[in-house]
Length: 81
Image (cartoon, rainbow, N blue to C red; front, side, top):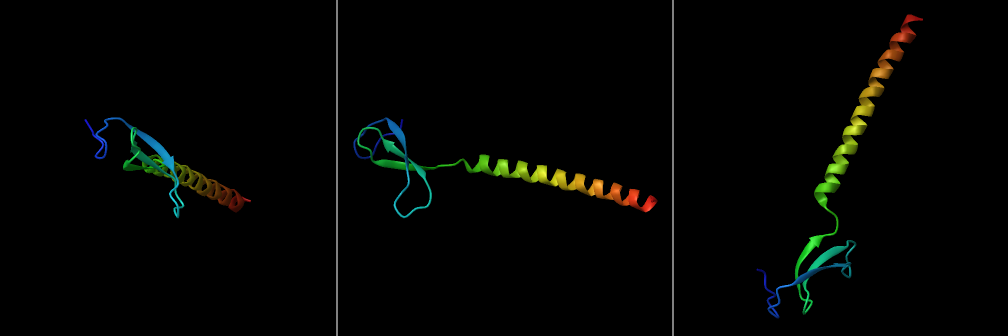
């Protein structure tokens, strides 16, 4: 069981904060009794963000591939005329 190093409490909470001079919001893990910070969590889940970006890239790649097929078909049609 985790223990606060200042007051010995065993309960903690997560508090959203934008530290002075920072452009980013973070979550502080704090002792629920005395409020001393014991850890920091990222505001956004980086893995989820990267997976979303990867999905968008894959969708764009599929669209580009389809456009290539369409252009090839169009080129073939124009050559026949």
